[in-house]
Image (cartoon, rainbow, N blue to C red; front, side):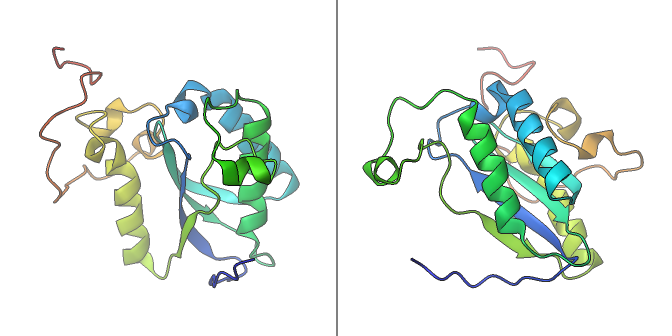
Length: 178
């Protein structure tokens, strides 16, 4: 088994990216209520604060603050992923490595985490969350994406991105002719 080096700080604030195995899937938004329930159940048993979140069709980004005496974010992600997986249909294709371990093959096994180090780092990752639906070509402005916690926050500065707008916008974006 791999020994991943993770910076674990009790009470720390972390940015996470978690992905589905199938990058063409829209499972996270088509089953958003299941994801919300899985997260709610996990927070009830193992508390943490969700400072910001954006749910995209095939991945999600979240910023969490853990309790002062706790640094076990891996346990929380394991519970969220497993609760979600138990309540959604299995994909048509399950990789052999997942099947061999009795997994449903919905999620990528790992996740990416980053310890937020200061206010500038937090502002950068909040910006990444707010702008993610734009960068993926889902919407033209952050407030148009219903699965982001930050556009509901009063007083948020407008998103100023330095990344190019997708040259071939998603035809599902409101206001774009197909």
